[in-house]
Image (cartoon, rainbow, N blue to C red; front, side, top):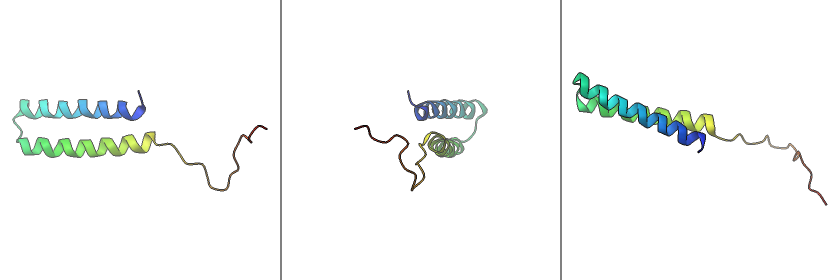
Length: 68
């Protein structure tokens, strides 16, 4: 399982917790939905920035020359 998948599972668990808390405390459903969308967006941003592969700097030669 990739790191991004683990991030998304964690965010989904957090959003489910938000819905449960909203129901228990009697928050308006619109507030809960807005919070869920914000959490989902922040989770995607955090997941992508921490799991993306870094591009090698331009101009650097390959570290392993081809074998002949």
